[in-house]
Length: 102
Length: 466
Image (cartoon, rainbow over all chains, first blue to last red; front, top):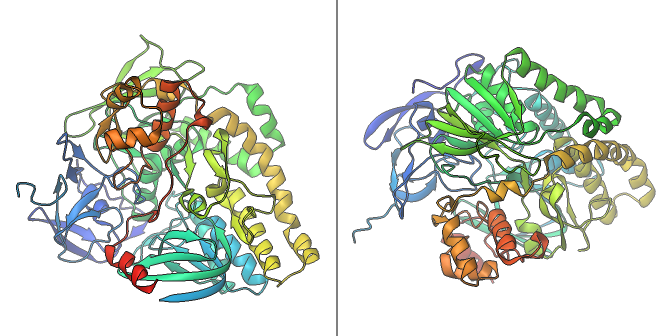
């Protein structure tokens, strides 16, 4: 899916990059991590523990916790409530986001 | 750490802000706590810092109304503390936390203006990426100017979907249709003519704009399944009967990349339940709602509820209830007398009376019907956190489970991070059907602190202080 940011009638904040699963991703000041990822056309934020299903943003108001990701090394952080910041390291969460082989 | 305030307001949406403004005009500096980054609530959500959005960019007039209210709040000297989570409530004291910092806030009067969230309605495929709540898609668009997808289907009931459909189309998305469960007859709508004109005109405006764009509003239709592997690729839709049961053989398939679900709202009653306010079951207002008098005061002295958290009624009602609650709190605090209260609250009470009539019609049309829950297939995931299916729940019911507590103990439903917000309403409905109880006789999960996940350090800080 192509760029989903609406261009008309908006001046965005400063542009910067975050690191999503080791890849550079463009974000703008004021965007949440979830918003920046969805804007790129990607939906996958996490893979569930029991059924290994893909999950994405659902409620976008911090209640459903479907959007939890590993952000700056911490698992279970809600991507819809976390403002993106320059150089932020974000990873797709698998299961509980910890090393489950241990 | 601990502090004290005459009036604390939880929630910085329309009800909370209106309450703070009214209180401030009566000489009380309220402490307003809000867990979002910025005040305004969901409906008046403002763009993030660093963004500037052209008001004419087709984002609807909610934000203009919101901006006006926020400006008024600033002029009245109202300060909103954003990013604060209130995670426990007792009579006289709230437990608050912001990041790693935690404190107890003592209050003399309290207004809970905690708002609402969207009723989760499970069906096969509703957990697929690309299936969102309509409100979530709207806030992504309003606040961040990001459109959730290219080929969009909206399904559910009520006016929000019509608003979001227009906003998505304005932003360049292809909106295939709005599926509306209810089929109101002209007779149902007649009493609306007596209601406030701006609401009626607004509703006609949304429908008219969709018609001009040739976006169909399919009344008596709904989504029955979302399909796709890694994300949604198609939607199966079907006609429904009067009780919202899908009609076999009427199914059609649509290619989509995005589905928005707007099935109405549920009041956020976590704090009102925790503090011990009596609740009553009012399905047309969103289920269990706190009991209060016409001045928004509960039976707990000095504790008020206002806005959607006190029963779903929309932002116009929230503004007036907030104002009434703010003035009443000022009276309880001795800043105005009963006569001044009556005079100052009269316009709001009058508006509430006329808004109430309009609302009653919408409530009747959009009240959830049984078909909503009967179409949930066994494979459908009910509890998103613990990944429990409807089939697993039904099996436990056949095995003799008769309460939510038993379902929780056996299946872990409601024990995940959303704290039951996503599965609770559906579990109650399935339990009622499985055990032959009425919905209102099913005992809900009991509310326990923290009502939202908080860092352990915040909990420890309170334990140490105690």
